Length: 55
Image (tube, rainbow, N blue to C red; front, side, top):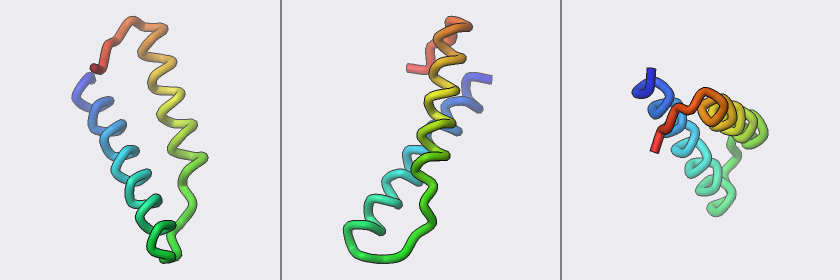
């Protein structure tokens, strides 16, 4: 379970980085920022509530 959560967070971070690079170089990219932010916040909040430490 922890590995799965870590992989989801890692994937979110990679997509955020890719989004920043698209914006930096002027390429069009899908805007996943709100979705990723909400997903990460939800995962971190649930982990905190359940006392699951990812880092």
